[in-house]
Amino acid sequence: MLLVYWLKQSISYKGNLNYGIALSKKQILFLLLSESLLFLLLFLLYYFNQSPDTANSFAWQNIFLYFRGVLPVMALTSIDDRTFRFLSNPTWECLITAIIVDYLVLLVASRVRSKSTSKA
Image 1: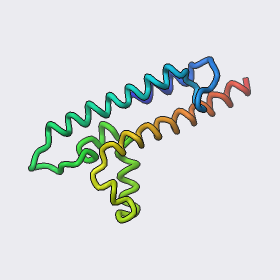
Image 2: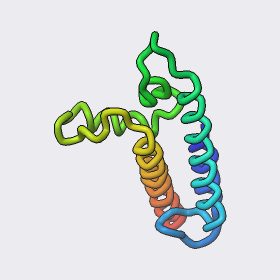
Image 3: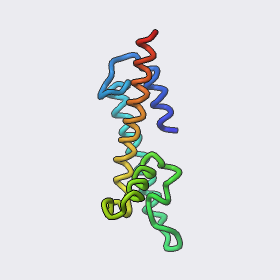
Image 4: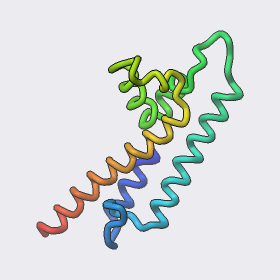
């Protein structure tokens, strides 16, 4: 749901591209801040609710809530577990991949927006 808001903002943005995406620098900073706060909230919930009865993995606990960060990391570990051994219990890596996925989605939306406005 967080990315839907930023896609709407990207489509309705009237200024120049910043870092390749159609958002102002303040909006980009707010996106990074909100993504970091969401990650921090999920991490704290994971940290304080660990139980020996369940799989204690940040990725498994938040696979549906934070899929933009968890699914790419899980895909990398399923490709070759030896190469990506450092991702055995990913936490901070999920934040980094979520920011990269957000950037790529907004970059594609900005390109589509710029092509549609240039045709008009």
